[in-house]
Length: 257
Image (cartoon, rainbow, N blue to C red):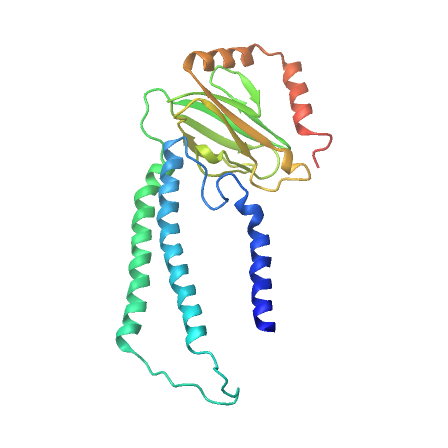
């Protein structure tokens, strides 16, 4: 009876631990819906890996429960020797070859998807923006000289090439719906790209602990029509240096240590 109570207590405790994950919008187990080709290819690789690992988990845990039930003591003394199981060559070959084949399949999918994730597609007129991380805000510099803080404006359906740098410490640029993370490292320039498929505002967050106000270092990509994009960037270009400085001070917080 005590063992049953312990078992159910552990199950209940595990359920409580996972409750906050299950309450997330997508259950917390899967990536968000992609809105850029590179993000879609990342999700494809994730789905393949998740499928294999989920199947392996069910197989291993199912076998574990089966063996626990089948080979339990059934009233035998603890000092009694259990049944002796000898080697099985065919089974041993199978559980050696199958994992190798699984790893090969995962490797093939990853290497097929990787070029579509890291390399920007050929585009006649890509938008090139410099993303500069600061404690604790993001600065975006556009080709026409405009500058925005924390809100990156882009046109829908146009390839956006980002040059990611940092002015102080290591940050990590991450807009989940538009692709993976890229580090912003002082003294080094990194590159990434995306192409927003649909209009909307895509939230993001610095994904590298960069100081005491790291949690407030948020960003948004605002994707809109070409006309709205031109209007937003023109407005940003006309903004006075004083207004930009005030925005920076407000977003950076009272301390940058």
